[in-house]
Length: 239
Image (cartoon, rainbow, N blue to C red; front, top):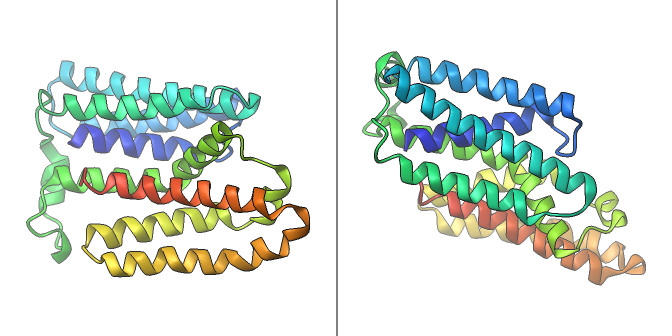
């Protein structure tokens, strides 16, 4: 599970560095370099054998590179949105399957974690902590990229709508983080309240855009919101 958590963390970090998902090669290269540096640092402290660490690092780096390239190309050209989504899903499932053969992390990294005096982490293994940290990283900027790719694939990206929903890039990560944390903690009623509040907050904007085509905006809102919520909920069972 630690390997999956590291991969999620690397993808989330890379997207945060490049910020604009359709950024140029230079920005994408910087994002990949930052992610690889973090992965190398974590693996160096994880107590793995050199060969095992190198294989794990290459696998994670390959996933991050493929995600950055395919997602940037899809959003820049407006075509091929399913490919980066398939890369992210297949890569995550592959690393999850590989978590069995890969030895658990140890070394200074796990000793540091075991020494943390945080009551909420008492009794929680490092593997669960790693996946939770990686999931939180993915739910930020990467979540926005996933939503945009799904909207692109569905053909629901009218320019006027994006100008109307200016707070979506901030509200999206916030709502996904709240949903993930509340669902993970078993607070399903509170999670439902967050979902309902999102609809109430967006309803006035949808109403004001009636002259510009409320049907298109409603479709955009529903697809984007459901994708965002589903991403947060899909990560809960991993933790």
